[in-house]
Image (cartoon, rainbow, N blue to C red; front, side, top):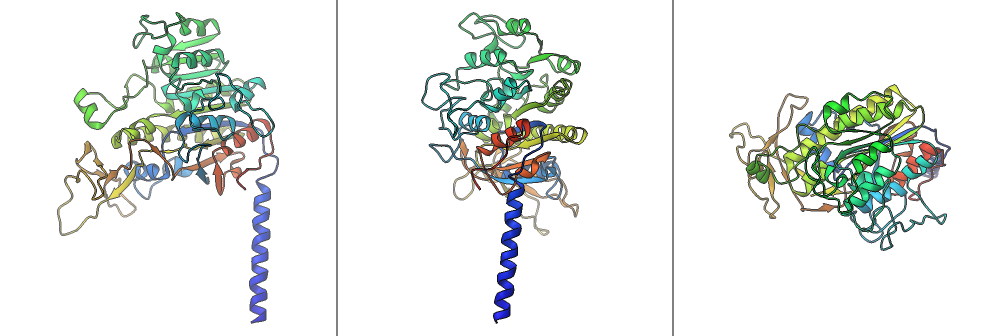
Amino acid sequence: MMMRRFTIFLLLELFIQSTAGAQDQHATQPTLGNVIFIHPDGASSCTWAAGRALLVGPDGDLHWDLLPAIAVYRGHMADSLTATSNGGATTHAYGVKVASDAFGRTAGGPRGAQIVDDNGASRSVAAQALASGLSVGLVQSGTITEPGTACFLANSDDRHNHTDIAAQLIESGAAVILGGGERYCLPAGRRGVYGVGVRDDGRNLVDEAKQLGYTVVHSRQQLLALSDDTSKVLGLFADKHTFHAATEERLAASKLPHYQPEAPTIAEMTDVALRILNAKNTRFLLVIEEEGTDNFGNHNNAAGVFEALHRADEAIGVSRAFVEAHPNTLVLTAADSDAGGMRMYGLVLHPDKPKPDVLPEYDRNGAPIDGVGGTGTQPFWSKPDRNGQRLPFGIVWAANDDISGGVVVRAAGINSKLVYGSMDNTDIARVIRATLFGDEYVSKNK
């Protein structure tokens, strides 16, 4: 008995020592390099699980699945257990726990109010990169003023102050700004490529951008034709978002597609951004957001989420290929919340019963169930599993808003070893800073 206890004690001691050693390796001096941060807004691990079944089958791998480093994400705010898009993005950009109304500034303060960290001051990782002579790019499927990217280089006391946020972005010095939102760059009444401007200050940010050295593009063809040595590029590919966020039923009634076919995909924008940033021969930060995963999720549009998720995964694929060709790069991805609480509702196939034709409209607890055309329609069918079997499923929704839980962080490339265990939302900026500037990384959560 004594020998057995000693053996157990010895094994426990060895385990503790090995765990301590594993923890120590995450606090070492990191390798300098580029950072690609991809924010598939509102996409939890449950969203990815449903997307995997539909797009590649339950036994297949998305590009997201092939990012080797993984950690559980803790996304609470200073005043709420669920993040807002602007508060979550501000936390990612600064590495500081802020309140829900923050947009690149201290919550409750005036415009430009300083975010204070443990050292008494803070600036976003993107602003710090620009001040250090590095390059920065922002790629967005929504308007360029969406907080998931805009919070990195703009601040406001109101996330809906799009015209002011747009002006700050154009003036920021970022080398790449791609997305929708042409209306916020043109004077009121001035017709652009996609609509009419709404600015009430008379400023024409498109003309100002050209004067600042930006090449301005409005179409997929113009974007893809850009040369790698383009100095700076502003892409405006839609009046507002490059997608139409609404329920399946409303889009069908309006005969609108999920995405505007003339706009480039987030993967196409990512590819061009990486070419331009890489040609500058300096380290860079590229922040990418697929906003459709969040907006379609909050409209409980399962088919829209699946299309948006597929686009986000393609952007991850482009980024993985870049990391393989340029190993001095970290690709990092995380959402900040779970849009709509999307959950896969698997149906059982009975060999002696007909295949399910139409899903019930609601679960027994009242939760709506989506099929391919919305509530109460035909089920989705997975791609074949390893046995060649396709399986039916629906999507059950928890809410029409962002909720908490299920988000994970994934990474590949240099310093991906920093992504492990549990990661606070403030750790996103720490990992980015560690890679861009060589700051020693020690998570506050460990």
